[in-house]
Image (cartoon, rainbow, N blue to C red; front, side, top):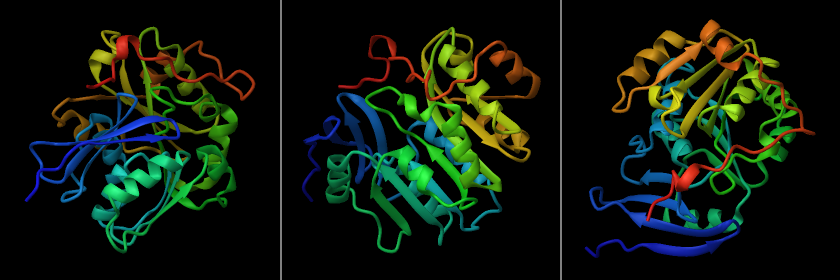
Length: 281
């Protein structure tokens, strides 16, 4: 069997590369302009290479009893890592994916095709436009994993965006967003404050080294109208290869103290990672 070879292709938002994993026969890393975007193992969609995807998977696993099908709205698609995970772990789930980069969608469809009958509906659309068009109380989970290059776009960070997410979620639904920041956490603290304005329950899943300001990194913000399973999430994230903490309640309130709620008029994207913190190759 021929060895897989890297694929390079210009897409709408830059230059995408699919790099084969030498240790896993049908696994690929997707980068755009050198920034890692997705990792997919076509033979085992439950294998999640990136730590932040593992943490969002914990949120998905705790969203309902095992094997129960979910309605999931994915804002941002990449190589469809998490939609494939949901399809494998919760058969029969109905999933919609909004990905604005048509060139990237074509690349993924050609080289990393979805399994037959996956239940995943992929649309070339802006994430916020797709969210605002979604019916009320139509999603069990909303996952926001949208990066323009290595930054979260500003229009996905405002209180108006948070209100749209709250409208689309069912009463016991969960919102999970992949964010990135470093000390002094101006962006991350504003996101907590903004979503606290809309949702009654929040938690933040983040590695201790990031939270202590030692490095720039990912953080997963989770929000819900109803109480979150923070104890279960803490157990799961503590057992990961790279353990994370689950900040909630008074500790999270202290973290966000003094941060302003962000409206569309003032919203800014997440900060640029220092020194190409997320770059490869």
